[in-house]
Image 1 (spheres, rainbow, N blue to C red):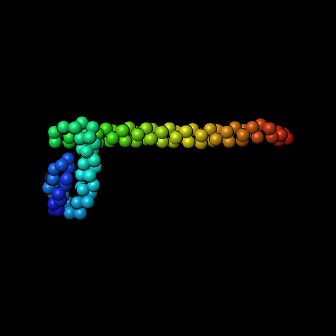
Image 2: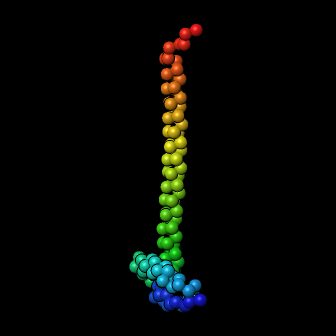
Image 3: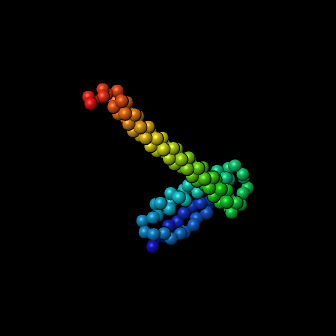
Length: 111
């Protein structure tokens, strides 16, 4: 198990992680650090805990927005698939109608 040091909101944290996950953890810590700096800039004088709280809220808001966008895209894809199915059904019906029309237009066989 690896150990890495992270810098978030003016403090250093030593955390353990799986071997090879250090860079990923550092990236995540950087994301949190940016949000913490944003919170401190927007509301000077925040305590460490409130800084991290606001950083978490900023990140949760972004995640929530991304989830809503993903749901919207999934719904649009479902509608697109329904449209494709309807188009195929209409095309199949049109082909059947043309065949029936051709049969009706054909001369009757001699009896």
